[in-house]
Image 1 (cartoon, rainbow, N blue to C red):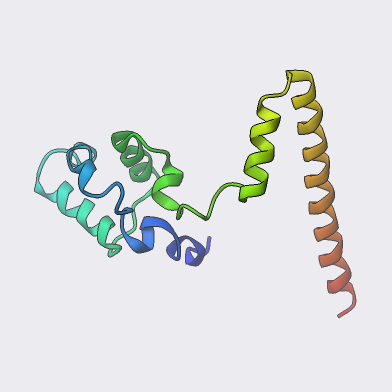
Image 2 (image 1 turned 90 degrees about the vertical axis):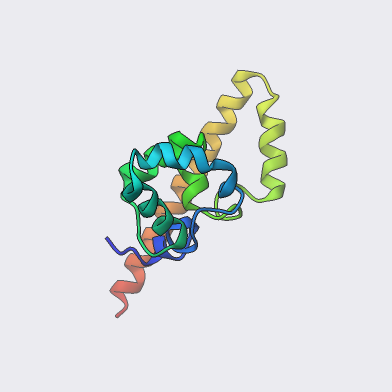
Length: 128
């Protein structure tokens, strides 16, 4: 798997986000385990000189009481745009039957879009 996309985002390239940095010192020490070498490794992760394994990301997220996404992705990288956030909030207040209908429509549109993308790729490959 190519790590280029992973390296350009989140703390894997930029260090642990500053909002988690000093406030979570004790939790990071817990995640690093006992001893100096664990704390040094955490500093390498923070500085972007070393990349943690998925297991380490999971343990850090648990120790810091945040999602792994908060450690890996920049704030604007994940989630819907502002307009969709408001729409999703409105849907969240709807009765379950209506929410299920909206989920079904969203899933259908997502699959439709994915299929269209695959077909477009096949058409381009066939025209070469």
